[in-house]
Structures are given as structure tokens and as C-alpha cells.
Image 1 (cartoon, protein in one colour):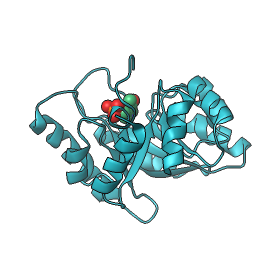
Image 2 (image 1 turned 180 degrees about the horizontal axis):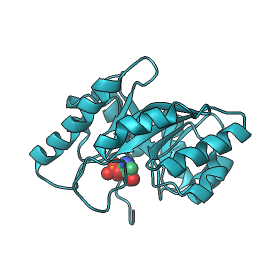
Image 3 (image 1 turned 30 degrees about the horizontal axis):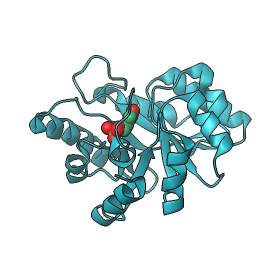
Amino acid sequence: MSITKNLNYLYNKISKDIKVVAVSKTKPNQDILEAYNFGHKCFGENKVQELTEKFNSLPKDIEWHFIGHLQRNKVKYIIKFINLIHSVDSYKLLNEINKRAEHEKRIVNCLIQVKIASEENKYGFDINEIDNVINFSKNLNHINIKGFMGMSTLTDNKNIIINEFSKLQNLFESYKSNKLNILSMGMSNDYNLAIEKGSNMIRLGSIIFGKRNYL
Ligand SMILES: *Cc1c(COP(=O)(O)O)cnc(C)c1O
């Protein structure tokens, strides 16, 4: 299977209203360039060092998204160029992003990561904390909260996934506005269900680039 073929399939299948973030973590620049030459310009990474290396060596019109757990002491390395941080999961991280963005005279787009899965190892704010987080963020002038991101439980049970996605869909609907309009939900295994539940941004790795050897 080629990357171009995979993207072609997805572009034909998925509505233009849904943004595809090509998750290129662990994949070489050559693979990213194949997608880029096809016309795909939006990529997601989950490690700061890997992302900065790729940013430095790849075309500058690529739109980079950060999708993994972000350590506060590493915000400074991506703040100059990052287009969207999907994974804001603490007040301290919000403060740090705001501070660094102010220093760069930027306003940085962020999504609040919401914990919808029951798995212990998933990051994100509790759903009943979101009101506070939104209010807190209103005082941060260098952050634009653009919406929410969530990950479902890793399971074959569709009902569990649908139930988790529904929770995030309801949350999104209650905050949705012209400014807050992104729902980042769905990966290679569950993007169809996510789209049914109102997702407008899907993060696809293995279905585009093939299997990874490690996370
Ligand atoms: C790795 C990763 C993805 C993509 O996973 P696939 O199953 O390969 O599509 C999406 N979102 C996040 C947060 C990830 O870490």
C-alpha cells in the first residue's frame, strides 16, 4: 500500500468539512514528503524533539499539530511554529503556553483534552471541570481555545466507543461558537464512529502511513 493511495482513498471518502491530521509520529521525512507532494499539508506529532527536527528539515508551509502529552519545560521549543496544540491537559500547561506565546507575540490555538475513556493511563481534564477551564482560559490573552480533543477506550466494543464519543459531542455542542469550533475526535480505528458523533477533525496515523513499530 502506498501513502498516496491511502490518502486518495480517504480524500474520496471523507467530507471536505472534516479536517484530516496525518499523524506522522515515528515515520521518516520521506513518508511525510510523499503525503505533502500528494497535497496534504497538515501533520501531527506527539514528541517535541521529533517534531522540531521534522519542522526544521521539511517545507515551511506544513501545518504542524501537537497531539501528545506536552511537558511544560518543552513548550518553548514548539511555541514559535505550532499551529494547534490538541492536548492541553492542565492549568499549569495553559499558563506556560500563554507565557511563552506572549513572549513570541503570538496567539496560539489550543484544544482542551477531555478524558472520556475509563482507562487510567489517558490524560485530560475531567468532563465536569471544563467550565472552570474555559473560564480560566478567558484570562489568558495569548491562547485561543478552539475546541476539544478526546480519545476513546482501546476496545472492540463499539458501544463503549459510541458512548464516550457522545459525551464529548454533547460537551462540544454546549460550547460551540464561531470561535470555538473544532472537535478533534477519531483515529484510524474509530474515525467513522467519531464522524457520526460530530467530529470535524480526525487524527489518522496507521491508516495513512501503515503500522508503527512503537507508539
Ligand atoms: C498515535 C495517535 C493517533 C493516530 O493513531 P492511529 O491509530 O495510527 O491512527 C491519533 N491521536 C493521538 C493522540 C495519537 O497519539
